[in-house]
Length: 232
Image 1 (cartoon, one colour):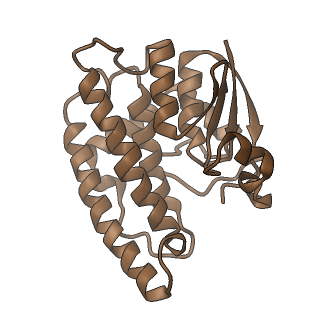
Image 2 (cartoon, helix red, strand yellow):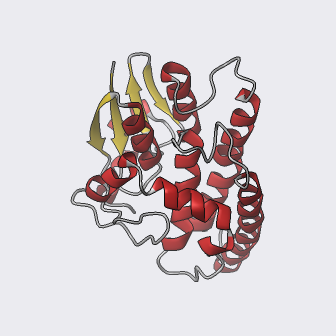
């Protein structure tokens, strides 16, 4: 079974890339070049009407939305999360949806408030409010990560580890033109440890070359320097 991952450097596609690498399945990549707004092209919108990245082409058709792709891969291949019938399945699902429905959208609105509200004052207020909410959400995740589960923080990482690490990376480096002092990974020691462990894994080290993320993309992140494409 082979897949095609439509990606952009340092976008949510990196979460799916790590999952695919961990699963050891065959896949090809297609760059969605954000520098030319390829995510809004007719061809891309045909398979992903929202214009968001990533999309995974599968034998069952294209799948978009990061959480949906992770869930589909989990159910199709196992390994990266509890299967249906596993007693831990409910916990896995609720935290997957917490990441995809709560934390991820809050970060997106923090980075692009102009897409959600008009006027500089309103955008600033929205950003500040979301930053306070995100601090609380990260504190919640830090508490959850205090105890290893078979869906988070295991020796062998899984879907939620990849998603959490990416969501912790982005507020440390984006947006470029605003104060980012509201976020410090060190404030969340359990999540910091999760990220440090993840960086030792082969599916993360590959990001240094494919996405230009450096050798410590989560614990000491820097802006992406990809060979191809643009993160923004």
